[in-house]
Length: 341
Image 1 (cartoon, rainbow, N blue to C red):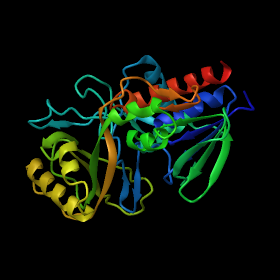
Image 2 (image 1 turned 90 degrees about the vertical axis):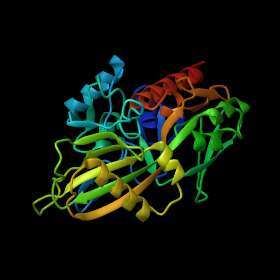
Image 3 (image 1 turned 135 degrees about the horizontal axis):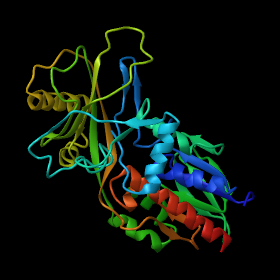
Image 4 (image 1 turned 60 degrees about the horizontal axis):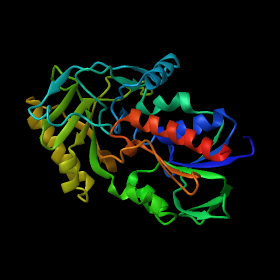
């Protein structure tokens, strides 16, 4: 299959799992990513105060195959177990954490984090395929019955490709794919919610006995100590915390100024912690416009154009990092069947 060329849009968990699966069977894979890094919402913000995991906070595994992947990451020192001291707010039983903030059943699952940062969790998936960063694909053009050309927002043109796997968030996937075929119309039924993330560096450790809080306030779904300090020279290190706003609060404040968002959520943390907070030496906010899958597609992927255009992502199966991994794997297998069929 060395002569076959496949484009993958998105370098998050789903896209990289699809790319790694295809690469292993000799397919020529090119990944296009709109941002400067890889990992999608397995994201880390590097700052002078330390590294903030401001996207997914941890992952869990329900299926043995994904559990094996996490063990592989552990063996490569790209993951480790995480067992924080938890504080559960009054609403925690109604709002269990979802993939974009945390992942899975907090009461039963073993939690894993990427090591030393969350974005390193993708390490076992990286292989010698090309990843074209800072290329926002805006259109997929048919170039004959079995070929496709990609166009980006800078008038770049790429291809032709024998097939395309799109792993962007559902609304962005719909924009790309619905013009191609009615087969992709069900993507519009997927509901995704935003999430405001706030990154705070305190001068001293918070005077609390817990490292993480699940829904301590209606506005905050998650708050946790975060970060890696190993590249810093000066000590003592600041205490780094990440707050994730609830879907409802994030939606209601989606277009608010990020400085105001940071200030308001800091006030919410102050009230929820029940302690006097140390001095803040740095605070910033990041808006995840498509963070949480609320209503998934209900299947692992969606294929059209004779199976040569496939949509995949965590939004296909649910709000878990594992769902993204499984969707990417299934999309790659479906593409292989379409190519050899």
